[in-house]
Length: 213
Image (spheres, rainbow, N blue to C red):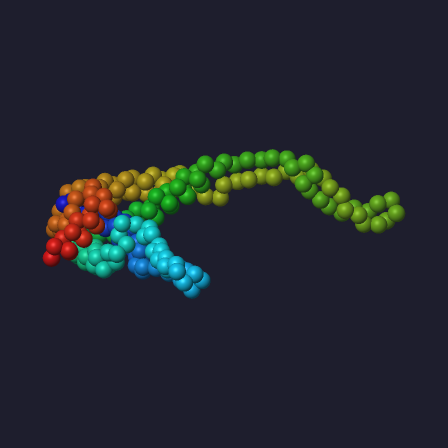
């Protein structure tokens, strides 16, 4: 399988483990609860009644097999991780580092593009100014007045725009290289089941094989 399918299968294994774990985390799947109604203590000629709680899923009673299934999935994840790691090491491109760096390039480019959208401006703010003066009685009092606010960009717009363009171009180049790696890089791993199989089919098949063994 190629790197892209390897990552997809990695997610598949993780999802299967989550579902299997949920089965074992539901106490009703791993214990049997039987309640005996001691009717004979009240009426000697009456038989006691035994009631067993219904299991929430078809996997109740298969806790050992589900636990073994989880161990098997974990082993497959370990094998796949090693195979992916080996495939990555054979590349000229450091995929893990470049993915993080490309995210940073895109974030910086967005910051710079936002900067270039700023413009010099001037506006009047009604009542935005203040001062002090002496009134007719010689006392100092405050007063309000209009204010003019001038905003001037304090950077070289052309340089910032050039940085944004360069970052976007570099990010696009790396993204293309990463995509090629995902499609063209082979990972030495043989999946134990089809990626499109359902959880029920995979687990049922595992239990069936375990029982036969």
